Length: 255
Ligand code: 9D3
Image 1: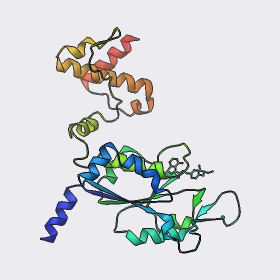
Image 2: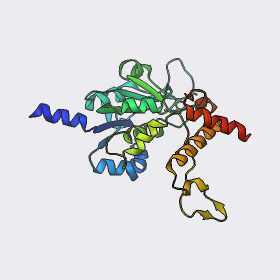
Image 3: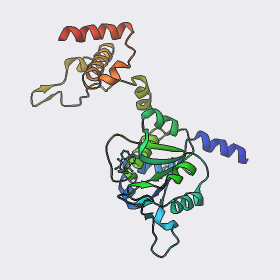
Image 4: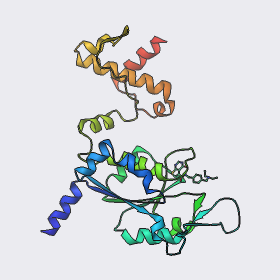
């Protein structure tokens, strides 16, 4: 029954990425190691790399040209992009990675992880013909306020952050649950054996076996870190619970 198998495909959370780039070789390493490698082997996600240059029809496979109106730098021509995307497109968001895009956040990663297919376009050179933005692209994302040489690393960041949210990609599903639990807080300090390394001791409470006290200590250290390092995140927290008010009082008294 075709309908049933279609719904299974959706619920299984499989994701297909089509990535359009002038430098497909940049992706080989990062997407072929570790968690993303295993996820592809397990059929949880698939990635097709498309060289934009393959969609050129002229002898010299030209993908860029001078800007109308003059100025420095080159601009990516529209036709290789429209032609190569239209040749494989089967639906879903068409995302341009660009310094002018909306800032990519965990919330956007969660939303994108609900899609079945994502199309990612990596810009290069000084820019891209505006008609690509107007008539092909549906969303434009930046990964932060710093200047990269192109959209490729940004596309890999998006693939990585979205893929780890797909069902089955991470080993223990608890890690994602715990993540949403303490969202908005930085992580507490982690320790493993030995309990004494060069005279630096693991906090006694973590060896006590008292799980309620350990949970309280971790929450307090998370609050401390967030307040110190990320006042922007700290300001957004709801700290009205009885436990948090107690922990905050303790932090104040330490100073
Ligand atoms: C002089 C204007 N420059 C914009 C800051 C031009 C320009 C520089 C670098 C245009 C494109 C690029 C290449 N960067 C990306 O394609 C890019 C990017 C980035 O540079 N920072 C953060 N996120 C992203 S997503 C794509």
